[in-house]
Amino acid sequence: EAGVAQSPRYKIIEKRQSVAFWCNPISGHATLYWYQQILGQGPKLLIQFQNNGVVDDSQLPKDRFSAERLKGVDSTLKIQPAKLEDSAVYLCASSRGRQETQYFGPGTRLLVL
Amino acid sequence: DQQVKQNSPSLSVQEGRISILNCDYTNSMFDYFLWYKKYPAEGPTFLISISSIKDKNEDGRFTVFLNKSAKHLSLHIVPSQPGDSAVYFCAAWGQTGANNLFFGTGTRLTVIP
Image 1 (tube, rainbow over the protein chains, first blue to last red):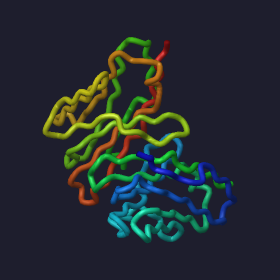
Image 2: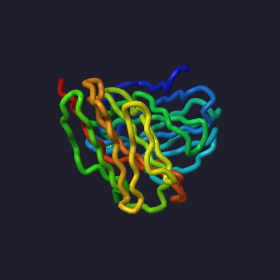
Image 3: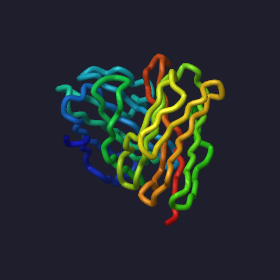
Image 4: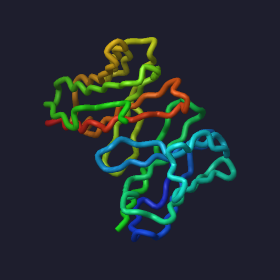
């Protein structure tokens, strides 16, 4: 069974630029999550999808972050414009359903200069 | 506010000995706890979990203990192997309204050959 795929693996941008991350979950997993992991901290949930609907986006800075999962499979997370404090690893995870074991992708490491 | 805490950022153990990683939580509504293991440049991988109706769960060399009255859980690895060297995250979820998974800040385990 293929794992969660993410791209790109690394991205360096300047502040105020835009960036997008892509995630392909494990086949058949209905729930998809985006986490932000700042250096020295644990992952923090940004947004949770159930199929193509948003379950929880209370921690998503909506003035600059957006995410979509249009067909209930792949998802993209966008930051526009980026700030220095957005430098982090962005992790995508998926699970069969809510409150089931989450499987993580390798993450995208973002550096904002 | 950090609802799941791992107060030891690092731990070193000799190969063959027991590793004990600790985790405390503050939210009494949490009812399911997980441990994830993370190697550099990879996403966290699920290791073991425990429901709040149990006080112990064992899987091979890994055992998780839960003390609900103290809001404390621990992960025991016996015997420790060099391949266990990684960052270990404690995580919790429950009937907190958002059904989110809350992570601790992680403990870096180094197993010395």
